[in-house]
Image (cartoon, rainbow, N blue to C red):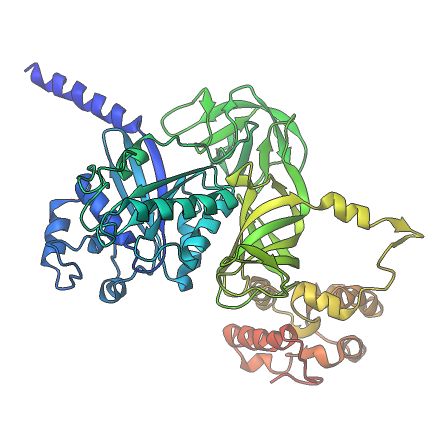
Amino acid sequence: MLAVPFLGERFDEFLDQEMGKELLRFTTAGSVDDGKSTLIGRLLHDAKGVYEDQLASVKKSRINRSTGPIDFSLLTDGLRAEREQGITIDVAYRYFATPRRKFIIADTPGHEQYTRNMATGASTANLAVILVDATKGLLPQTRRHSYIASLLGIPNVIAAINKMDLAGYREDVFLRLQADFLALAKHLNIPAAQCIPISALEGDNIVARSRNMPWYSGPTLLEHLETVPIQPSSSIEAIRFPVQYVIRPDSTFRGFAGQVAGGAIQSGDRVTALPSGQTTRVRSIVTYDGNLDTAVRSQSVTLELEDEIDVSRGDMLVAPDAPPLVSRAFSAMVVWLYEKPLELHRTYLAKHTTRQVKARIARIRNRVDVNTLTSEPASGLEMNGIALVDLETSSPLFIDSYRRSRATGSFILVDPLSNATVAAGMIDEDLSERSAARISRKGGRLAGSPEAINPQERFKRHGHLPAVFLISNHDFVAESAERALFDEGFETIVLDGDQIPSGSVAALLHPLWSAGFVVLFVAGSIPIATRRVLEMIARDAFFDFVGSEPSLNREELERRILARAESVRLGRTSSTSGKAD
């Protein structure tokens, strides 16, 4: 009878011990056929991180590329195409634990085509394992992945000199490659680099020390992974709390949910809400398991504030005495992830912490040649390209440099049309003061820009020309069409023609047209004079749907409006005075 509580206590102790272990996130990278998947498979196998059914499945696999009893790469290459081709295509995440630490591995592709996948897998890593084939030496992909590791601020890098069995386990081969890699790491300002001679296939220096290389006295791969210091992803000690969601279950509670991105938050701490600038104190820190006295970096909590201040999703609670930069212009290193090349001045969506704003890349300062690690002038950026660029946003972001904080120094760019992630960015420096210095007022006009803004400039900013659509007075049609246009990236607005005097139509429409808007003019009855004003202002970008509406349902009408709108997105319009078919 006494054994049950004893077992329960032992189990609770075991859970506490497991929960208290440090977590190391690391990524693997290297060229094709360097043996990344084999290395991870061997590490999982020798560290007892593979279930018996997984091992049995690999042993029975008909796709076996190894000469030994087990093809360790099959433990990580999960996609059918990966198994058949013998390459890694997507990022494979694996978890395992030892008595000393817990680990999350990101096994990333080695082919140049999938460099963007490597950047994705390494974005949250504390350490990078870069494989070097002992028979080939440092290759362009080795330099490419080392550069990305340094760019992403990964503090620890291991050069695993693999296939030492094929090099005869020769010490001189290892020493030569070690010197080459350490020179590369020094050039890239990688803080800590370690070289380990291994054979992933044979298991040398992976978990157990190799008998074939008695001349090597350093740690095995697992020993290094278990003992390397885990540095925080942020050097900022001040409070950074991006608000993800406002929780208000009833009138007695109003909380702000999010993840602590910097510093530690305690009950009673003073915080300032950005962008409003209002200051209050933290009343309580609420979690599902109860209230906390302190919330630390990377912890997800809900904050209850003492005062009713204006805070919503995308805002940030910060330390009043050490706030982040509030900026609409900054430089950043970007890795282009999309098949379509970068378009300068095109409007993208920038997602930074929990905030989303419109953004455009105003200038490419230089592009990085990862083969030579030099910078070169560029006017465009293709997929997998890396460049230093200047960005401008429609609303301010609350930023720190990426060197100080990954959370508040990173962002992604999204194509508003396809909703595809097109780039990942690391903020370098704020350009607000430089922008302000360039814009000095002289005689009521902006110095350096005496010419009026022309339609082509607005087209570059918005990504489309202005247009006017005339539709019948159906609120649900107008609202549906406006939402569809807005979701497709158009600057659009609905005007209720029945509420506008005929003599005021031109005065109201002119500034909207000049600003580049797509206007949905909705009215029950359209006087001839009003129609002529619309036609005169919009000319060949006037689309009249009134006559065709009775024969169209809402979905078809919306589809035709979007089809016409695409012509102004492409900068092409056709005369549609009269009726739009």
